Amino acid sequence: GAGVSQSPRYKVAKRGQDVALRCDPISGHVSLFWYQQALGQGPEFLTYFQNEAQLDKSGLPSDRFFAERPEGSVSTLKIQRTQQEDSAVYLCASSLVAGGGDVKTQYFGPGTRLLVL
Amino acid sequence: AQSVTQPDIHITVSEGASLELRCNYSYGATPYLFWYVQSPGQGLQLLLKYFSGDTLVQGIKGFEAEFKRSQSSFNLRKPSVHWSDAAEYFCALNTGGFKTIFGAGTRLFVKA
Image 1: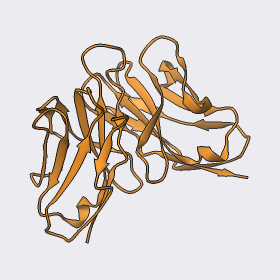
Image 2: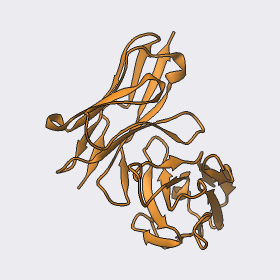
Image 3: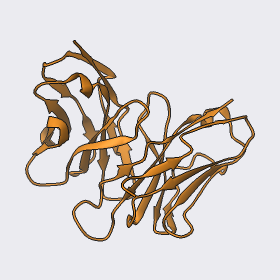
């Protein structure tokens, strides 16, 4: 597609529910990133994929957070047993790796706004 | 540790006035530097980036930024602000790895 897409755009969950957030990166982009953006803050890195390999998950806040990208394209961020502090906007970004000077330029999706009640 | 500081939480300028948004970073070498803009309900849009070379970089929508190594700064400027520029602006750095570190953002208000 033309850009990074995310779904759903909004999600309301009851505390304790599991949620799954989807990201469709730009076609051909090898790198995929997930960020968490709390209200009034900048995005904070969660995890990084190069193709299907999750090379860095150091930013995941707890073991309730899990991300996958099984075929190297679409990615899903799953949050188990959601807590109120998980309420945030979850941003996905992709970038083109392997060649070119733009390897560090990330293209962001619109985000999923998660509200945990 | 690397960090990005945007000292101004919010700034108000009159339409047509000039704009400068401040960004300071902490890193021992020259990082990759970015400015993004985020409108309400939207993702981040890249305005401009600095990787190397000319320290004055031009971006989209009439924005420019100047990298000053001696001051560890990468301030964003625009000579004449339009009402549509009202948004949140984020400065970010990358040191060559997977992580990009963002500042807390500066919200720009434009008054008529």
